[in-house]
Image (cartoon, rainbow, N blue to C red; front, side, top):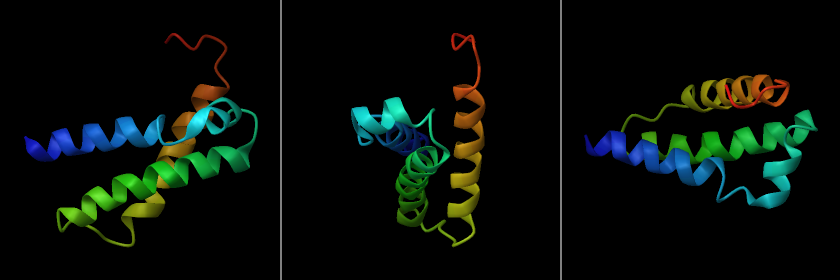
Length: 82
């Protein structure tokens, strides 16, 4: 259960507070900034995997690509409440 709490915490701090207002608001307007946002998030979560002995070089690109794809999809939605 503590691993779940760790990853929820890492997700929460890496997805917004550590990004800053500029990156949070501009990531939907630029694929480069969205990639930067995704790479920061993936790096923090990957460090969580590493700290648990579950790290691999292959995890980071998958985390980054998945987060990029999801946030890009969300940024192009007209109704962001769903």
